[in-house]
Image (cartoon, rainbow, N blue to C red; front, side, top):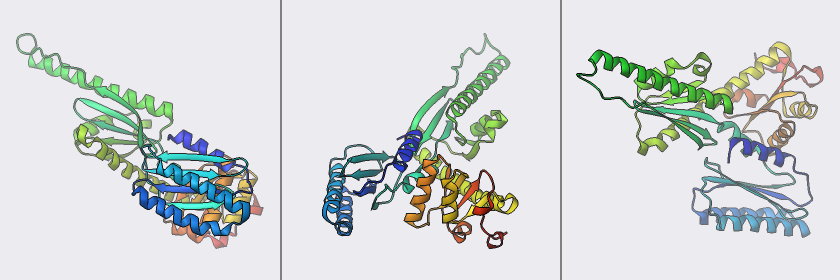
Length: 354
Protein backbone atom coordinates (compact mmCIF):
# COMPACT_ATOMS: atom_id res chain seq x y z
CA UNK A 1 0.00 0.00 0.00
CA UNK A 2 1.48 3.34 -1.05
CA UNK A 3 0.89 6.74 0.49
CA UNK A 4 -0.90 7.95 -2.65
CA UNK A 5 -3.14 4.88 -2.82
CA UNK A 6 -4.01 5.18 0.86
CA UNK A 7 -5.04 8.79 0.33
CA UNK A 8 -7.34 7.70 -2.52
CA UNK A 9 -8.87 4.95 -0.40
CA UNK A 10 -9.54 7.36 2.48
CA UNK A 11 -11.33 9.79 0.16
CA UNK A 12 -13.38 6.96 -1.35
CA UNK A 13 -14.38 5.66 2.10
CA UNK A 14 -15.25 9.18 3.29
CA UNK A 15 -17.60 9.58 0.33
CA UNK A 16 -19.23 6.17 0.67
CA UNK A 17 -23.03 6.73 0.67
CA UNK A 18 -24.97 5.92 3.79
CA UNK A 19 -27.01 2.70 3.67
CA UNK A 20 -29.49 1.09 5.99
CA UNK A 21 -27.21 -1.91 6.49
CA UNK A 22 -24.26 -1.35 8.87
CA UNK A 23 -20.68 -1.38 7.60
CA UNK A 24 -18.06 -3.08 9.75
CA UNK A 25 -14.62 -1.48 10.07
CA UNK A 26 -12.09 -3.95 11.46
CA UNK A 27 -8.53 -2.87 12.27
CA UNK A 28 -6.34 -5.89 12.90
CA UNK A 29 -2.86 -6.58 14.27
CA UNK A 30 -1.70 -9.46 12.05
CA UNK A 31 1.43 -10.03 14.13
CA UNK A 32 -0.54 -11.78 16.84
CA UNK A 33 -1.61 -15.45 16.50
CA UNK A 34 -4.51 -15.78 14.08
CA UNK A 35 -6.48 -17.91 16.54
CA UNK A 36 -6.45 -15.16 19.16
CA UNK A 37 -7.33 -12.53 16.56
CA UNK A 38 -10.34 -14.51 15.30
CA UNK A 39 -11.43 -15.17 18.88
CA UNK A 40 -11.30 -11.45 19.76
CA UNK A 41 -13.21 -10.48 16.62
CA UNK A 42 -15.83 -13.21 17.15
CA UNK A 43 -16.42 -12.08 20.74
CA UNK A 44 -16.96 -8.51 19.55
CA UNK A 45 -19.40 -9.69 16.85
CA UNK A 46 -21.43 -11.65 19.41
CA UNK A 47 -21.94 -8.57 21.57
CA UNK A 48 -22.31 -5.99 18.75
CA UNK A 49 -24.92 -8.08 16.89
CA UNK A 50 -27.34 -7.60 19.78
CA UNK A 51 -27.72 -3.93 18.78
CA UNK A 52 -29.37 -5.02 15.52
CA UNK A 53 -32.62 -6.83 14.77
CA UNK A 54 -34.27 -8.47 11.80
CA UNK A 55 -32.64 -7.89 8.41
CA UNK A 56 -30.03 -5.52 9.86
CA UNK A 57 -28.77 -8.26 12.17
CA UNK A 58 -28.68 -10.76 9.29
CA UNK A 59 -26.61 -8.38 7.15
CA UNK A 60 -24.31 -7.56 10.08
CA UNK A 61 -23.56 -11.24 10.73
CA UNK A 62 -22.95 -11.91 7.01
CA UNK A 63 -20.45 -9.04 6.87
CA UNK A 64 -18.72 -10.34 9.99
CA UNK A 65 -18.49 -13.85 8.53
CA UNK A 66 -16.84 -12.49 5.38
CA UNK A 67 -14.20 -10.69 7.45
CA UNK A 68 -13.60 -13.83 9.49
CA UNK A 69 -13.20 -15.87 6.27
CA UNK A 70 -10.62 -13.36 5.01
CA UNK A 71 -8.70 -13.71 8.26
CA UNK A 72 -8.67 -17.50 8.12
CA UNK A 73 -7.50 -17.52 4.50
CA UNK A 74 -5.18 -14.53 4.70
CA UNK A 75 -1.97 -15.26 2.80
CA UNK A 76 -0.59 -11.78 2.15
CA UNK A 77 2.48 -10.50 3.95
CA UNK A 78 1.58 -7.66 6.27
CA UNK A 79 1.87 -6.49 9.85
CA UNK A 80 -1.67 -5.12 10.03
CA UNK A 81 -4.90 -4.84 8.08
CA UNK A 82 -7.99 -2.68 7.81
CA UNK A 83 -11.10 -4.39 6.44
CA UNK A 84 -14.36 -2.67 5.54
CA UNK A 85 -17.35 -4.85 4.82
CA UNK A 86 -21.09 -4.38 4.33
CA UNK A 87 -23.64 -6.99 3.32
CA UNK A 88 -26.69 -5.57 1.59
CA UNK A 89 -27.50 -3.50 -1.43
CA UNK A 90 -24.90 -2.83 -2.58
CA UNK A 91 -22.36 -5.17 -0.98
CA UNK A 92 -19.01 -3.62 -0.10
CA UNK A 93 -15.73 -5.32 0.77
CA UNK A 94 -12.33 -3.62 0.98
CA UNK A 95 -9.31 -5.26 2.66
CA UNK A 96 -6.14 -3.16 3.04
CA UNK A 97 -2.83 -4.46 4.40
CA UNK A 98 0.12 -2.49 5.79
CA UNK A 99 3.71 -2.98 6.92
CA UNK A 100 3.20 -0.76 9.97
CA UNK A 101 1.42 -1.70 13.20
CA UNK A 102 -2.24 -1.05 13.94
CA UNK A 103 -4.08 -1.83 17.16
CA UNK A 104 -7.14 -4.09 17.10
CA UNK A 105 -10.37 -2.13 16.97
CA UNK A 106 -13.81 -2.93 15.57
CA UNK A 107 -16.67 -0.62 14.67
CA UNK A 108 -20.09 -0.98 13.08
CA UNK A 109 -21.99 2.07 11.88
CA UNK A 110 -23.69 3.69 8.91
CA UNK A 111 -20.29 4.98 7.74
CA UNK A 112 -16.83 3.38 7.77
CA UNK A 113 -14.45 4.35 10.57
CA UNK A 114 -11.51 6.06 8.85
CA UNK A 115 -9.65 7.92 11.61
CA UNK A 116 -7.06 5.12 12.15
CA UNK A 117 -6.26 5.29 8.42
CA UNK A 118 -5.96 9.07 8.56
CA UNK A 119 -3.62 8.84 11.56
CA UNK A 120 -1.55 6.13 9.87
CA UNK A 121 -1.18 8.27 6.73
CA UNK A 122 -0.18 11.30 8.80
CA UNK A 123 2.34 9.52 11.03
CA UNK A 124 3.93 7.19 8.46
CA UNK A 125 4.34 9.62 5.59
CA UNK A 126 6.90 9.18 2.81
CA UNK A 127 10.53 10.08 3.47
CA UNK A 128 14.00 9.26 2.15
CA UNK A 129 16.84 7.43 3.90
CA UNK A 130 20.42 7.67 2.60
CA UNK A 131 22.75 4.95 3.88
CA UNK A 132 26.28 5.93 2.89
CA UNK A 133 29.76 4.49 3.35
CA UNK A 134 33.10 4.66 1.54
CA UNK A 135 32.11 2.64 -1.52
CA UNK A 136 28.38 3.09 -2.07
CA UNK A 137 25.17 4.78 -1.05
CA UNK A 138 21.74 3.16 -0.79
CA UNK A 139 19.05 5.79 -1.30
CA UNK A 140 15.76 4.38 -0.08
CA UNK A 141 12.22 5.76 -0.18
CA UNK A 142 10.13 4.59 2.75
CA UNK A 143 6.42 4.65 2.05
CA UNK A 144 4.05 3.87 4.95
CA UNK A 145 6.87 2.00 6.67
CA UNK A 146 8.03 -0.14 3.74
CA UNK A 147 10.61 0.28 1.00
CA UNK A 148 8.90 1.44 -2.18
CA UNK A 149 11.99 2.51 -4.13
CA UNK A 150 15.73 1.91 -3.76
CA UNK A 151 18.50 3.53 -5.79
CA UNK A 152 22.21 2.79 -5.64
CA UNK A 153 25.22 5.04 -6.14
CA UNK A 154 28.59 3.31 -6.33
CA UNK A 155 32.06 4.77 -5.99
CA UNK A 156 34.01 4.77 -9.29
CA UNK A 157 36.57 1.98 -9.44
CA UNK A 158 40.11 3.04 -8.72
CA UNK A 159 42.64 2.64 -11.49
CA UNK A 160 45.32 0.95 -9.43
CA UNK A 161 48.30 2.27 -11.35
CA UNK A 162 50.83 3.29 -8.79
CA UNK A 163 54.62 3.48 -8.67
CA UNK A 164 56.41 3.97 -11.95
CA UNK A 165 53.34 5.14 -13.89
CA UNK A 166 51.87 7.42 -11.19
CA UNK A 167 53.50 9.40 -8.47
CA UNK A 168 51.77 9.33 -5.08
CA UNK A 169 50.72 12.92 -5.67
CA UNK A 170 48.98 11.98 -8.92
CA UNK A 171 47.33 8.99 -7.25
CA UNK A 172 45.97 11.10 -4.38
CA UNK A 173 44.71 13.70 -6.83
CA UNK A 174 42.87 11.00 -8.78
CA UNK A 175 41.36 9.64 -5.55
CA UNK A 176 40.07 13.08 -4.54
CA UNK A 177 38.55 13.52 -7.98
CA UNK A 178 36.77 10.16 -7.78
CA UNK A 179 35.48 10.97 -4.28
CA UNK A 180 34.18 14.32 -5.50
CA UNK A 181 32.38 12.68 -8.43
CA UNK A 182 30.92 10.05 -6.11
CA UNK A 183 29.50 12.62 -3.68
CA UNK A 184 28.14 14.69 -6.57
CA UNK A 185 26.39 11.62 -7.98
CA UNK A 186 24.75 10.92 -4.62
CA UNK A 187 23.55 14.51 -4.35
CA UNK A 188 22.15 14.38 -7.88
CA UNK A 189 20.18 11.19 -7.17
CA UNK A 190 18.79 12.57 -3.89
CA UNK A 191 17.85 15.83 -5.61
CA UNK A 192 16.07 14.05 -8.45
CA UNK A 193 14.18 11.66 -6.17
CA UNK A 194 13.02 14.24 -3.64
CA UNK A 195 11.96 16.85 -6.18
CA UNK A 196 10.13 14.38 -8.42
CA UNK A 197 8.22 12.62 -5.63
CA UNK A 198 7.66 15.59 -3.32
CA UNK A 199 9.53 14.44 -0.20
CA UNK A 200 10.05 16.86 2.66
CA UNK A 201 12.22 14.76 4.97
CA UNK A 202 15.66 13.16 4.61
CA UNK A 203 17.43 10.94 7.14
CA UNK A 204 21.15 10.21 6.71
CA UNK A 205 22.79 7.04 8.02
CA UNK A 206 26.48 6.07 8.14
CA UNK A 207 29.78 6.61 9.91
CA UNK A 208 30.32 10.24 10.84
CA UNK A 209 32.96 11.07 8.21
CA UNK A 210 30.80 9.89 5.31
CA UNK A 211 27.60 11.50 6.63
CA UNK A 212 29.41 14.79 7.23
CA UNK A 213 30.96 14.76 3.75
CA UNK A 214 27.60 14.18 2.08
CA UNK A 215 25.74 16.65 4.31
CA UNK A 216 28.23 19.42 3.51
CA UNK A 217 27.76 18.80 -0.24
CA UNK A 218 23.99 19.17 -0.17
CA UNK A 219 22.56 22.40 -1.57
CA UNK A 220 20.76 24.54 0.99
CA UNK A 221 17.24 23.52 -0.04
CA UNK A 222 18.12 19.83 0.51
CA UNK A 223 20.16 20.40 3.68
CA UNK A 224 17.06 22.02 5.21
CA UNK A 225 15.18 18.74 4.72
CA UNK A 226 17.65 16.66 6.76
CA UNK A 227 15.61 15.84 9.88
CA UNK A 228 18.09 13.43 11.52
CA UNK A 229 21.53 11.86 11.16
CA UNK A 230 22.07 8.32 12.46
CA UNK A 231 25.83 8.00 12.80
CA UNK A 232 26.50 4.29 12.68
CA UNK A 233 28.11 1.76 10.41
CA UNK A 234 25.92 -0.78 8.66
CA UNK A 235 26.10 -3.98 6.64
CA UNK A 236 23.66 -5.84 4.40
CA UNK A 237 22.60 -7.88 7.42
CA UNK A 238 21.76 -4.74 9.42
CA UNK A 239 19.88 -2.77 6.76
CA UNK A 240 16.43 -3.67 8.08
CA UNK A 241 17.42 -2.78 11.66
CA UNK A 242 18.79 0.56 10.48
CA UNK A 243 15.57 1.27 8.57
CA UNK A 244 13.55 0.49 11.71
CA UNK A 245 15.69 3.03 13.59
CA UNK A 246 15.03 5.55 10.82
CA UNK A 247 11.27 5.01 11.11
CA UNK A 248 11.43 5.56 14.88
CA UNK A 249 13.42 8.73 14.27
CA UNK A 250 10.90 9.97 11.72
CA UNK A 251 7.97 9.30 14.08
CA UNK A 252 9.64 11.58 16.64
CA UNK A 253 10.01 14.23 13.94
CA UNK A 254 6.33 13.83 13.10
CA UNK A 255 5.41 14.26 16.77
CA UNK A 256 7.41 17.48 16.84
CA UNK A 257 5.59 18.66 13.71
CA UNK A 258 2.27 17.98 15.42
CA UNK A 259 3.28 20.14 18.38
CA UNK A 260 4.31 22.87 15.93
CA UNK A 261 0.92 22.62 14.20
CA UNK A 262 -0.89 23.10 17.53
CA UNK A 263 1.23 26.17 18.32
CA UNK A 264 0.51 27.52 14.84
CA UNK A 265 -3.21 27.03 15.46
CA UNK A 266 -3.10 28.98 18.73
CA UNK A 267 -1.01 31.73 17.14
CA UNK A 268 -3.46 32.01 14.21
CA UNK A 269 -6.32 32.30 16.69
CA UNK A 270 -4.65 35.02 18.74
CA UNK A 271 -3.20 37.18 16.01
CA UNK A 272 -5.60 37.34 13.07
CA UNK A 273 -8.67 35.26 13.92
CA UNK A 274 -7.65 32.55 11.46
CA UNK A 275 -7.85 29.75 14.02
CA UNK A 276 -10.85 28.28 15.80
CA UNK A 277 -11.48 25.54 18.34
CA UNK A 278 -14.26 23.13 19.18
CA UNK A 279 -16.01 20.28 17.43
CA UNK A 280 -19.17 22.09 16.34
CA UNK A 281 -17.38 25.22 15.10
CA UNK A 282 -14.78 23.17 13.24
CA UNK A 283 -17.46 20.99 11.61
CA UNK A 284 -19.37 24.06 10.40
CA UNK A 285 -16.22 25.61 8.97
CA UNK A 286 -15.40 22.34 7.16
CA UNK A 287 -18.89 22.19 5.67
CA UNK A 288 -18.59 25.62 4.06
CA UNK A 289 -15.03 25.11 2.78
CA UNK A 290 -13.44 27.61 5.17
CA UNK A 291 -10.73 25.32 6.59
CA UNK A 292 -7.11 25.37 5.48
CA UNK A 293 -6.02 22.56 7.81
CA UNK A 294 -7.76 20.37 10.41
CA UNK A 295 -5.87 19.77 13.68
CA UNK A 296 -7.37 16.87 15.63
CA UNK A 297 -6.44 15.00 18.80
CA UNK A 298 -6.30 11.21 18.81
CA UNK A 299 -7.97 11.30 22.24
CA UNK A 300 -11.17 12.80 20.83
CA UNK A 301 -14.14 10.45 21.15
CA UNK A 302 -14.73 8.07 18.24
CA UNK A 303 -17.94 9.66 16.93
CA UNK A 304 -16.65 13.24 16.92
CA UNK A 305 -13.32 12.49 15.30
CA UNK A 306 -15.00 10.38 12.59
CA UNK A 307 -17.36 13.24 11.70
CA UNK A 308 -14.47 15.70 11.42
CA UNK A 309 -12.05 13.55 9.42
CA UNK A 310 -14.84 12.46 7.08
CA UNK A 311 -15.77 16.10 6.36
CA UNK A 312 -12.10 17.05 5.92
CA UNK A 313 -11.49 14.14 3.54
CA UNK A 314 -14.58 14.99 1.50
CA UNK A 315 -13.26 18.54 1.05
CA UNK A 316 -9.59 17.48 0.49
CA UNK A 317 -8.49 19.38 3.60
CA UNK A 318 -5.05 18.42 5.05
CA UNK A 319 -5.32 16.72 8.44
CA UNK A 320 -2.76 16.84 11.24
CA UNK A 321 -3.37 14.19 13.91
CA UNK A 322 -1.96 14.99 17.33
CA UNK A 323 -1.10 12.78 20.28
CA UNK A 324 -0.63 13.86 23.89
CA UNK A 325 -1.39 17.57 23.48
CA UNK A 326 -2.90 18.98 26.67
CA UNK A 327 -3.25 22.39 25.00
CA UNK A 328 -5.44 21.02 22.23
CA UNK A 329 -7.38 18.67 24.50
CA UNK A 330 -8.24 21.57 26.81
CA UNK A 331 -9.84 23.34 23.82
CA UNK A 332 -12.08 20.41 22.91
CA UNK A 333 -9.58 18.21 21.07
CA UNK A 334 -10.07 19.77 17.64
CA UNK A 335 -9.41 23.00 15.81
CA UNK A 336 -8.93 24.44 12.36
CA UNK A 337 -6.62 26.89 10.65
CA UNK A 338 -8.86 28.97 8.38
CA UNK A 339 -8.52 30.33 4.88
CA UNK A 340 -10.36 33.48 5.91
CA UNK A 341 -11.78 34.90 9.14
CA UNK A 342 -15.48 34.74 9.90
CA UNK A 343 -16.71 36.10 13.24
CA UNK A 344 -19.62 33.65 13.28
CA UNK A 345 -17.23 30.73 13.72
CA UNK A 346 -14.61 32.27 16.03
CA UNK A 347 -14.55 31.21 19.66
CA UNK A 348 -14.19 33.73 22.46
CA UNK A 349 -10.56 34.85 22.65
CA UNK A 350 -10.75 35.00 26.45
CA UNK A 351 -11.26 31.22 26.51
CA UNK A 352 -7.97 30.50 24.79
CA UNK A 353 -4.74 30.67 26.82
CA UNK A 354 -2.09 33.08 25.61
